[in-house]
Image (tube, rainbow over all chains, first blue to last red; front, side, top):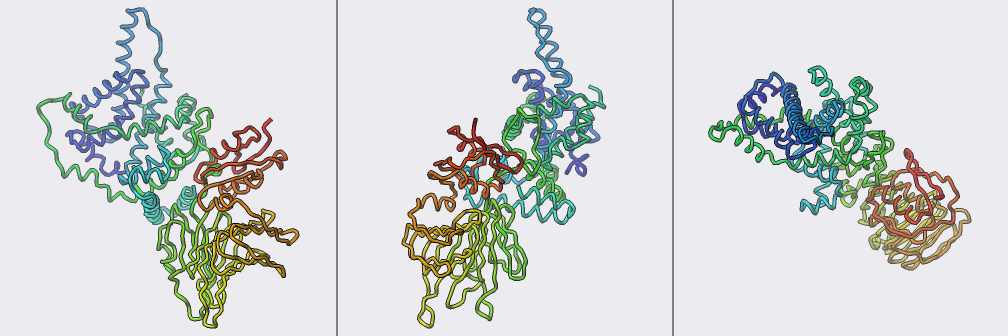
Amino acid sequence: MMETETNSEYLSLIKTNDPVAWQQLIRMYYPALLRFANKILNDSAAAEDTVMEVFTILWQQNRTFKEVKQLKEYLYVTTRNKCLNVIRSKRREKERNQLFSNQYLTQEQMDAHLIYADVLVEIRKEIDQLSPKQRQIFVLAYLQRMTNDEIASYLQLSNQTVRNQKAAALSFLRKAIRKKFPMELTLVILLLAL
Amino acid sequence: MGEKRLDQLLNVADLIRHQLISGLPLEDNKELVELLQHLGLEQEVLKLLADRENLTNDILQAEKVDTTAILNLIRDNSSPVADLPMNPKQGSRLISISAYRWIAAAVFLLFFGGLAWFFSQTNNSAQPKIAAPLSQVISPGRNRAVLELANGEKLVLDSLSYSAGQNKQFPFIDLGAGTVSYLNFPVNKEGAGEIHTLITPNGGQYQVILPDGSIAWLNAASSIKFPTAFNELQRKVSITGEVFFQVRKAKHTKTGKRQSFVVEAGEQVVEVFGTSFNINAYENENAVKTTLVEGSVKVRSGKSAINMNPGQQVSFSRESGSFDLVKPDLDEVLAWKTGKFVFKDAEIQSILRQVARWYNLEIVYKDDLSDIHFSGSISKKDQIKELIELLELDGRIKLTIEDNKLLVQHRK
């Protein structure tokens, strides 16, 4: 979305350690990288240390990236390499203790987890397009599977407000999309009918 | 990890996101499937994504991340002394996305529909299939209807997508919350107004406040035809399906007569003056059932007529054309209006007809189940799954959903 236009600006903000840009970077990538590392290492404390190390290095290096994709690749590759280093040192330790067993992932499994991590990132980007209230309601309704009534009492809104929030967003968006994507309308109506 | 392979992995992620956003099964995207096969990752990735519970949890987990705390840790790790000054202008430019709002809107819309649907599916990690096609989505009904105007124009009223005042001709009609109102409808010069029809589909319900202030609640797959202004002598509407009426007390006309309220349901006519009653006139039910809650009602068909007292139900047989007066369980009769299914020693066929209308399903009987009765109650907001669980609980029948069909058989 906004990447194409603000690409270089965003990347230079990351380079100069701008806190707002960094918070967004962390929002997007920290959870995904943490999960990725945890799958490789099978050790959540070690995974946390590793991901923190990856971000710290990036912060210190003030690297220049030409596009966001490069930044993304950097994060995944660095995380993976750091994890493999941890495994290697663990293995050495275990070999010394003669307790070595191969409990780690295959190359394919690791790749699959990398894909999964990136899907997570992309989903987070979508969720971040919503207004805070819409996002909250979305999360409660569709991820935590709460009913309108439950959401209403949880957020201390009226049931009607909850519905309105959903409906208002949809109707605004429907107008927006009608202008830009008349071709997509059938699909949209299909989705709205759900 | 080679650069090319990494590139392909990210490409796969992008294709998956695209499928999720549009609510389509991953298998539908040929490019994605081929790429996965080429990478030798088909099974791994499909297995990972099939576990929706996990994906949901991971997204929820991600929502909880405290970015400020993590940022502070990174800073502390890096340099305890030097901190770069914050530039608020740059920051605000970054998060201002107004120029891209429509893109966001489009993506959100597709995402909301697609992903919302994706997550509202029950978790079924055992099945390799990622997402069912659209036609298999079965959800409970909601407030929705079609309003047909005198000129044939049709307005779609839907709690999910409709906002009040959308219609330019009659901006005041729709009150939202599943109600249309004709209380302030402008009376045209001829007096009696144009005829409008409110129609609910399977899986819909709606209510209309009639020009005199009487209220009609429509159950699923029902309709009511009414004038936008009643005439002096008679308030006349006709219905199909099931409608509950709360009729305003009659005014005395200039000639001293009381303005009656008349409901036509096929051959049966109900005449009232001020009362609450329910008419169930579904064509696939064998009788038209009129249940009186309060007030008094006269039910007619052809030459025969019968007067009812509160708490009574008149059952008009379509076959014999005769009336039958019984005392029904009011909770059961009126349950639909209060958002519940209530069954008291009800035949399975009668239960499933209601289920079919509310969840928009076709019922297919694989065995003869005519002697099976059930008692129980469940919210109409529940997913079909829970209703199925309830009906299967005592082990007599087995229910299976296949596409838009509900297959019913004896449990062997």
